[in-house]
Image 1 (cartoon, one colour):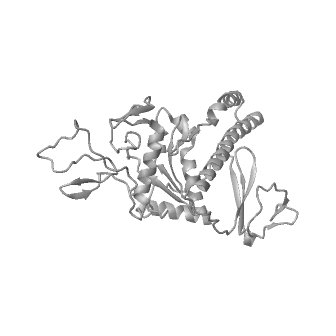
Image 2 (cartoon, helix red, strand yellow):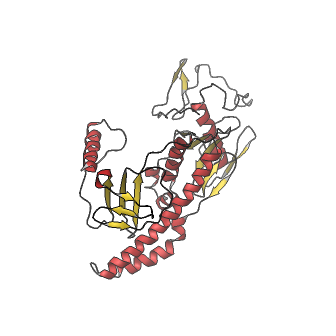
Length: 347
């Protein structure tokens, strides 16, 4: 009943506009085809973790548990979950304190992609593991075997469990890999900046399978909550910021680059790797937005080449702008037509 109450509150708040973000639909009954089940026990239910490591649940008894970690405090509730792969999990709610890491002087900009999962501003390239692509043959075999079974039969139910376990293995492997990578990045850097990608929009393109296989959204969520947990700074740079075609040395914004162009040369003489240059620009943009000390983190101004130093008599100030970057018009700073606000954090 408590979950139903929260669901209706969220739905009504979204309907009236008080709740920000995507629209929330009304609560509905769980589908009969959904094999997931969950039940929650609170303190009033008198569940107990025994000294021998078993979990005592009311009306069920003592259940053996394989603990992934010791509980840091006494739990206030436990939720027993059965997933589609016919596995059972116990999720405990405990009260803990944040483990703040020692301060670090380094900051990192991250450019996410498909060929390389992540390119860091220090030049490190993390190859995309492509867990779903590697398991595609096994999954296709299991799906074909499932399609041959009679609907409603026990063999079809067993085949569906095999398919769910194969998909769960891919998801668990991806989640474990992302946890290790995100933890290492947060531990080694005081501030982490990423680009605010529209994953939902990219998931509707011809690259949808590769985008979902990469798991950018879950990775950035891990970075965000781990930064808050360990006392680090995490920020997202505006998705309209031209990180790829801006020169990280002189700040010049060049023409749009096609996806097959992996390196390009700026008129200032610098040659850039597409992804490394984007990671450097993301880092610089994040520091410029979140540096409260007023230090100059953008590239220093440099004289324009002789062929570009042209004065237009009727143009006092340039009005060329990029989404999310302020420009000057008539001596006043204005924002682009659809610039998004980024939450401010203290490094």
